[in-house]
Image (cartoon, rainbow, N blue to C red):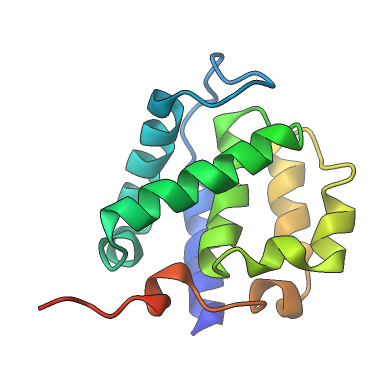
Length: 138
């Protein structure tokens, strides 16, 4: 279940949009979050469709801001950060190994991606995916 999600995250992460020069150690603009949500809807379509839009938007904004606060100021690495949050309902971000990782996150997209993928299974399985916490309506 998570393993296949992890594969989806691996695929999705490499296809991240170009970094926005507007995102610089500041408060996110609604357009920045809208861009990330739009991208996530393309790369993990089924998962994002299973999450109520208001919940998804608020969750992405929260974790995108956390990424920015941690110095992750480009949209590519923010995408990776938020994907891990989505796949664990944010629980991975509380794991000691992830907290340690974020003290000095790699600056390049490839190094950041590789380091996230190298995190142990316990981090990737720290919580259920966000979309599994909501029952489909209808």
